Amino acid sequence: MPNPKTSKPAPEPPVCEDRERDEAAEKAFIESLIATGQAARPDKRGKLPAGATHEIVESDTDNEPKVVRRRFSAY
Image (cartoon, helix red, strand yellow):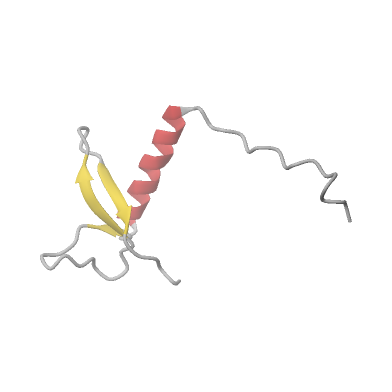
């Protein structure tokens, strides 16, 4: 077992500076949430449908939806 006082600290994880790749991954994630029913707009009472974990809160200038996590799924 290594001595914690003399062990080197763990290296920092690499930072992804590829903004386009990050934006594409975010867009794909949001599209998958919507396609599977995990993201939805609330009903007239402000409640999300069963199975939805994210609320679609707005659309940006490119008409892309923005989502916010509202609850967790236990399955």
